[in-house]
Amino acid sequence: GNSVTQMEGPVTLSEEAFLTINCTYTATGYPSLFWYVQYPGEGLQLLLKATKADDKGSNKGFEATYRKETTSFHLEKGSVQVSDSAVYFCALSGAGGTSYGKLTFGQGTILTVHP
Amino acid sequence: DVKVTQSSRYLVKRTGEKVFLECVQDMDHENMFWYRQDPGLGLRLIYFSYDVKMKEKGDIPEGYSVSREKKERFSLILESASTNQTSMYLCASSPYGTDSQETQYFGPGTRLLVL
Image (tube, rainbow over all chains, first blue to last red; front, side):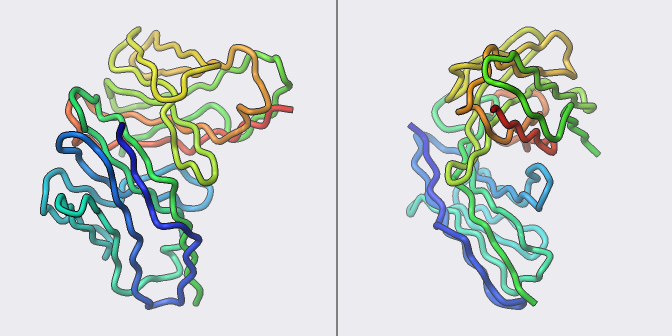
């Protein structure tokens, strides 16, 4: 079946540090890949997405590239801010036939950024 | 902006009670989803619906049922609550489509404690 594996957290960084959160997946076919973010006390919101191989999704300084050869979608940001403290989820959909956009999530990575 | 609302932010119930969690979206979306979120497990799909009165089981449907009588409302029902159903419950919706590329929009979540 489909699965998503994220690097274990929590991740603690100082402001302006470089961020990488690793995400790899297992899926049949050609899934779409997503990063969702959950700020404290809120629901999830889309951060970025990529729908085919070699696509790069980007938003708010975050980037991720869909790498089919390594089945990866790692999240990066060059300089994190305190306001980036949140839980980050990697997810996929669309693998293996009609999906209605059902998402398979990774376990989430807690990011804390200190001033 | 898309708005997905959930009837309660916090709920405390006793073992054996019947529990209703309500979700309403205001963007005329066809697809609606119920997930539960647990630390270290990410989000797992309980049920989804792609049209009024249409529903399909997700990955962990046992102990749950759903109802969708109107397009904007999707209810999750715990027929007889148990302590292992203590969790955060998240509702989401997305526009029409059988493909994988649509963004899901999430509500703020209901934190349920079953005593």
